Structure formats: C-alpha cells, structure tokens
Length: 206
Image (cartoon, rainbow, N blue to C red; front, top):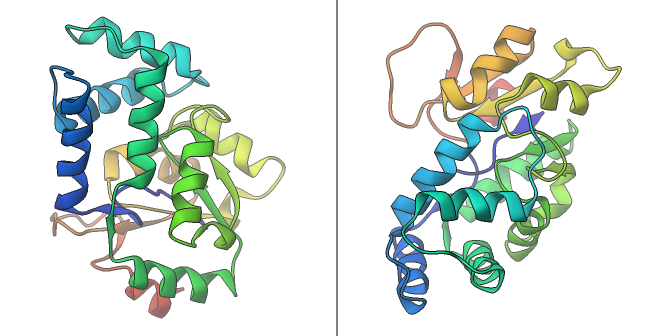
C-alpha cells in the first residue's frame, strides 16, 4: 500500500500552523504559512518529473517571494515543519498497526525524505513503513516516473494508493491501473473512485 502522508495521514492542527507562522515571523519573513505552502503546491505541479535538491527548492521560493531565504533559515523552517503538532495520531497509529501486519506500507510524499522520516519518528510511525520516498529520492507526486520507480518489476495491480486528493494523489495511479482509495474528508461528490470518509474504514475494506 502506498500512502500519501500530508493531509491523508498527518493532519496539521490549527496550533501547528500558528506555530509555523510564529517561526516565519521570528525571521521577519514577509509571508505566512499558507502562502509558503501555496508556493510548495505550485512547485509540485511544475516539478512532477524531477528529483529536487534543497538548493533548487530554495531558489524556487526566492524567485517568488520578496525576500531571499538563506539555507540556515530554510533548515529552521524544515525543522519547524517536522515539529508541527499533528491531529489524530492515535487513530493513525491504530490503522497503520493493523495494515502493517497484512501489507507492505510505503510512503510517497511531497517533501524531503529525511524530514518526513524525522516527522514520522517523532510520532513513532516510522517503523510501519518499509520505504519513504520524498522529492530528493523520486520525482514529486503525482508522477508516473515516481510510481514506476517504486514498483520496479512488480505488478502494478498488486499496489494500492491511498490519498485525499483525486487530482494530486489518485489520478496518475488510477491511469496506470493501480488500485486507488480516495479519503474523501471533504465529502466531494464523485463516483469514479472507491472512497472512505475516515481512516478507520481502511480496517474494514482492506
């Protein structure tokens, strides 16, 4: 099973985004948490076939903001991201504990691999995953090249992708013939994808 991490498993608390805004404010950076993550979203769409270095990402941000971010500040922002408080950790732990006894679990995420592993370790979730793939290991998700790299010589029909966005998570795996499950937290009307409305339902259908 290949999981999207952010928003599918790792929900930000409102406290967490406020803490991130405070960190940005401490450096007197003229943007907010939401503005930065909007730039990250734009970056993902434009980079879905490329492996990304931190230098390239910093340059991308600097081209779109009215200030240059140094590597030191960027590292602090990454550490802030790792340490943001999250919601529903007990529920996520329970679901992953159940699924990991039956399936191999893989994370394919839009972030740098080490930072996501640190984040998973902080909440004692890292041991459930056999692999974590971020920007610096595979092209950004969603990506045909990235998914093909994960699967290698395996049969794509043996894999299931779980995500909370049809366009950003499920469209490509679905086109490739992979099983897909849509975590429909916003109750979007759709008929194309198998859907669940909360993570606990995975225990029933898998």
